[in-house]
Image 1 (spheres, helix red, strand yellow):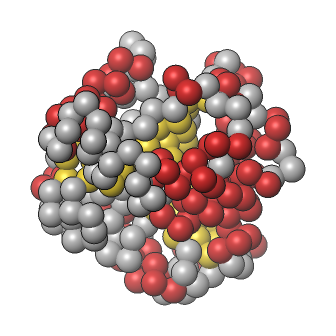
Image 2 (cartoon, rainbow, N blue to C red):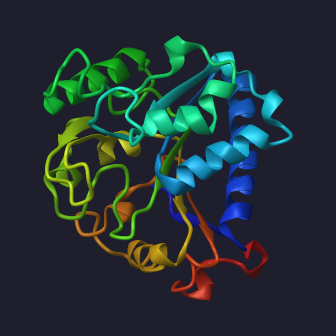
Amino acid sequence: MSAPQLVVHRDKELMAQAAAARLITKIVDAQATRGSASVVLTGGRNGNGLLAALGTAPARDAVDWSRLDLWWGDERFLPEGDPERNVTQAREALLDRVPLDPARVHAMPASDGPYGADVEAAAAAYAEELAAAAGPGDHAGVPTFDVLMLGVGPDTHVASLFPELPAVRETERTVVGVHGAPKPPPLRVSLTLPAIRAAKEVWLLAAGEDKAKAAAIALSGAGEVQAPAAGAYGRSRTLWLLDAAAASELPRSLYPPASA
């Protein structure tokens, strides 16, 4: 478990640009070391804002997009191409404009895919895909993610792990079907905390006043069942990337003045 580090930016636009630059550096470093990189994407306004910023970043072309594996932390269990699906939004924000290898874009199954409306079967299939990509030195039956990004919800949820629901209590499986999510749609597929914690680095993104209370709760020592964001951490680094509004309820002692 790595203790959380905080970086607070003036506003959400600057946060997105800085996070994009930070991600490019991580991908390039991983590719230089291993030949490839593995990143887990998140949806929502902050995740998509980061992807859009990455698309216009001056250093974008330093990434070898053909040697990048992309995974997702969660997905709305909706038909392929639905505008509410994270993968659909990611394609619009960035993915359709960079030369990715389609075989390395690991979208979660759709509700009109080979598993039909069976969200548990879809989750099990994604777990199998992760396990097949894992190597002997990897952890928890998933590949070693260089960076796993998570948006933090106003209720402290991350991925589709909502407070008190069964998915946040999962200790064995890496991917689960989520039923009755309090935020529509009710059916989702999500990585679990064991899979999240296998990542080298976990980045939690929070921008806006509506995220301030969630950040304060998650960073105050709350339990992960009540505040799932508190249970999301990486093996080598846990990084909270916030704007000033999202950090407004945090004690200033948690982050250095230079990061503001």
